Length: 158
Ligand SMILES: Cc1cc2nc3c(=O)[nH]c(=O)nc-3n(C[C@H](O)[C@H](O)[C@H](O)COP(=O)(O)O)c2cc1C
Image (cartoon, rainbow, N blue to C red):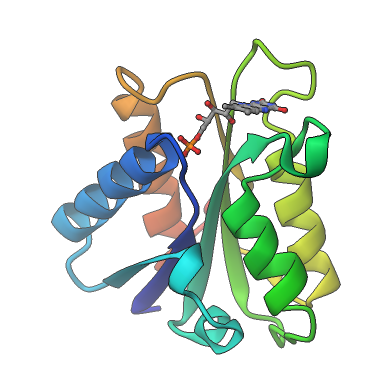
């Protein structure tokens, strides 16, 4: 597998930092994989089909006034604009962020999984859930990045 399209939403910069750290690691460790990064605000439904594999990343927010939801920009994209997308079995990886100060910690992971299942995506590897600020957790990000590379190369991704 040779290309990965990343779509992320980030309001206070945590998911953006996580995605940037991951993308830098992938480009360094697996230059054969072409990595593209796009913000959810600028994404169109057809962008979900770009690349051999898709990575969606979002923090958890109180979108609509209830905690445990997707970031509002990811919600607008996945739930409002991409309602009719068929991923056709495309391999999908997921990153969810959250904070232990909230009861529904990192619940964005479940919303992303529901989107993948509902829209006929295949799980490329188990989601990466990052709790609390990403700063100082770079090794965790890179460790998951190593599994992602293995999965993209068709090895056991676990
Ligand atoms: C208004 C607001 C609501 C939040 N709600 C939740 C929540 O329900 N569950 C959770 O785990 N984290 C919650 N968080 C924490 C964020 O998910 C966390 O800080 C995340 O790293 C933010 O990522 P971002 O900067 O990429 O948007 C909330 C943060 C804010 C500011």
